[in-house]
Length: 355
Image (cartoon, rainbow, N blue to C red; front, top):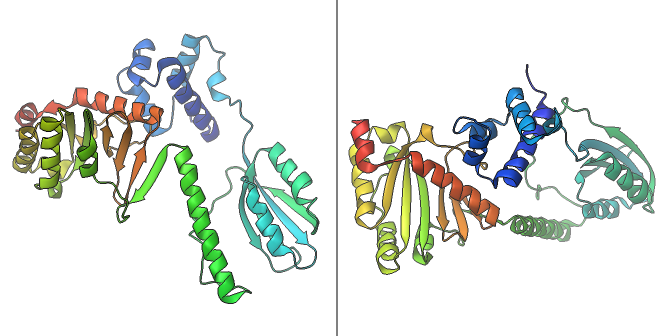
């Protein structure tokens, strides 16, 4: 029987919470204790679904009530829409006032009977407090009309950044004001990301981080995994030089997993030559076919990343890279690396099986 989407999400969130609280984030430990086959928990997380029978097994094992994993202690978030009528010419002031409320998702001035459209995502209590105590008591508000969105019957397109070409009443001064507001929003978003132990950098950013900087500054240990295609095997002298200095001059331990897609597997001679260069420069190398990769809590597909000295994780993506430095984040990526390291093969064994 198909599981309701909302129940499925709540159930998965509860299982993730139990994984951290009961098993310290160790999926293999959880699987052993519950007599599950290896990689079962990782598949639940990557697919976003914990089957009914397995959910009941967890509840029985932990002495929980039947169905407890399908219940959420937090009140549900709902989507509300509010139409507001404003006295006089105070629309702009009211729109700026709404910036202070985090549950407000969208605001727009309107033509016609109503003056302002507001989209809110919150619990029912938070919504009532916003409308009754904050919005209706605002001096220039005449009255409001509220509507609640229906779950399962709503969609929206992704909204782009503010359109700066849209003309305003204040000419250049208004344009400059909107540019400043846009920049301030970007700064606050950056600060919010820092609170989540996350830094995001674009590849073209002058502050961008390259694996070379990681290897240049590592003190004791690096865990390194990278996805390779046939066009990725090339001699990178800087990385080889940094690896040699880290292993020989500073005595650092560097382990690297090559993730190979189908095209890379057809270029085994190039794979061997590239990997051999790293081995000669002190790096311990293992090979793993991409489809065998065990997923982490943070992604269903293999990601290239570097864990440096248990201090930070650099996650490499096509257009940007992320840096995570929270203890839980580092532990998750470290455990993910170790799981995949155990199933990966050394170079000679991989080539022997492949040939």
